Image 1 (cartoon, rainbow, N blue to C red):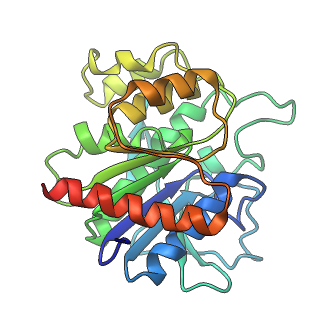
Image 2: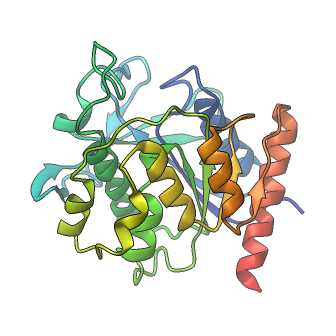
Length: 274
């Protein structure tokens, strides 16, 4: 039975047409619309990278949601929330913005194709920003669907930071994993998380501190996993098999992929009711 009457929160590091060219961007665009058309409620979030043309996509700031400050690595950072409508769909996308983290024109690499040294903090800010905004909206998702490593801190925050928050206490987390090359994260990542009050023992799963380690860490705290690419790295394939969780296999056909997600998410919901 397809998913109906559920509240689905989609969190992705890229969404078409704002950031294009990847399977992740297409999935994060098409799946929420499919959920919406089946009678579900949706909220969709991504980072407001500097390369996104605000005028072309008609982004505007949501003043009532902006104005919070988030402490990342013991420093205050202003949270701005912007929103845009997706052309040809009754769907809005919320953007998490911050002058320091997201003004730069590139997404995750500098002009020399070097991974930004503060990408871990950008991901922390993005994930915290999404969850704080959802709380401010007064909205309680049934399913939180994460796409990509930049959403990798969502399960940690939901399970161990907002674990007593009624907005998230019943939410099931589904993590979509993609064929992304591992990139190094700051070696002080665990220390930054410890500043937020997380137990050091809990953070051991972050391993060497690569984006792939972060996704594996996130999968370990999720309720189900989706294969977003036909092939994953060997390490990721091994990790997916190692976790005793429901897994949705990759489907090449777009319609089959949409139907598969609807059925899979309904199964995750029904398991929550058992």
